[in-house]
Structures are given as structure tokens and as C-alpha cells.
Length: 120
Image 1 (cartoon, rainbow, N blue to C red):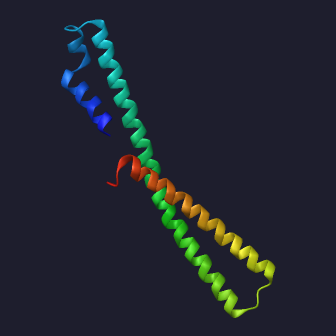
Image 2 (cartoon, helix red, strand yellow; image 1 turned 180 degrees about the horizontal axis):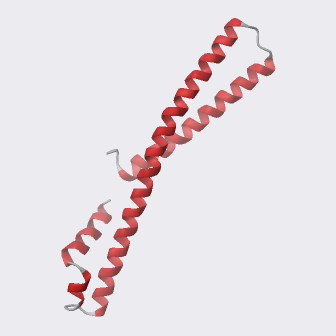
């Protein structure tokens, strides 16, 4: 983020490229253009990550809801009727799969927070 801010400060403090191109040499003009492109790439990268983060938050909420429903349903069935070992293994495998899916999303969200801060 600090690097992004430095690049943005450099680009905006130097002014727009067409006006500056008349006053500076070709090397400086290329450096300014390169800095602008780098800034655009960083902004696009952060925007893409933020979009994915918001989608992951929405998915996490849904997956947690589904996991809670499934685990409650499994517990009810265990109390009401005698389940075969095969049914129990099937339910447990399904719940484990859902838990892993939730954990994966939580890891992606944590990675976003490490990279971009916890502002969203």
C-alpha cells in the first residue's frame, strides 16, 4: 500500500503527461508513463481482490447457514431413528466437506485482510 501511495504521489505531483512531455526529455516522459501504468495495474489488482473478497464474504455466510442446517438435521435424525453406520459416515463426510469449504473461504478472507487491511 505504501508503494502504491508513493507511485500515485509521483504521478500526480509531476502533473499530466502531455503537459510535462514538452518540458522534460523522453526518458522522463517514459518514466512517468511507466509509473502511471504501474499505478493503474495496482488499482485494478486491488479492485479485483476486493470484488473477490466481497463475493467470498457472501459465500461464507451462505455456507455457514447450510452447515448449521445440515448439522442440526443430522443430530435430529440421530436422536429420532437408528442410523446405519453407512448413513452416519455419509453425513459426517458431508459435514467435513462443508467445514473444509468454510475453512478455505475463511483463509482467503484472512489473506485479503493481511494484504489490504481490514477496512472492508
